Structures are given as C-alpha cells and as structure tokens.
Image 1 (cartoon, rainbow, N blue to C red):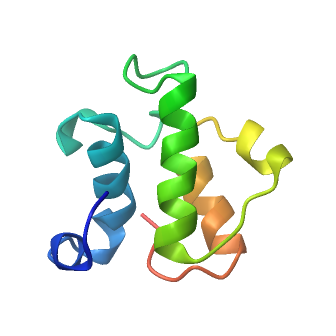
Image 2 (image 1 turned 180 degrees about the vertical axis):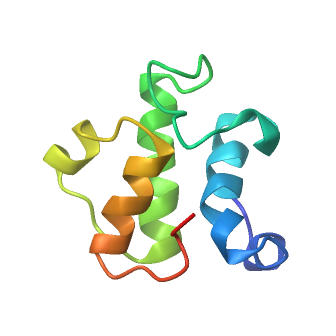
Length: 91
C-alpha cells in the first residue's frame, strides 16, 4: 500500500491511477480510463478486492457491495468516488 509520502508526489488527478497501478503491480502508463476488471489482465477478482480496500482506506469512503460489483473501469471509479464527495479524482 502507498504511504502518504509516496502518493503526495503524484498529481491529484493521477493519484487514483497511481494507487491502482501500485495494487495491480503494473506501470501507471499501462492504465487507461477504460482499464478495469476483465479488461486488464492484472485486474483479477482478488486484485479487485484489494483495489477497493486500498481506495476505501485512502479516501475514507465505504463502497457498498453493489457499487463494488458495478466497478468496470477507472473512469467509473472516478465517477463513483466523486459522487461520494472525494475531491481530486476527476481526470
């Protein structure tokens, strides 16, 4: 998991992608707004749970099981987090 010092160096609009890349163990350049489970090979069902846990802890939000199941892309995650009042996640 990223420390505050590690993620602070990432511009806010890229912080979400940076956290996801770290969890998935892929270079950030590999991610696009369309990346998600079923699209990116590294984004397995286990990694999906890890991504959710890291994002919930980092941003201080709780996602429902329906929201978690509905995550299909980074763009969708950005929208979901923004709807929960998380600042700085818009692309």
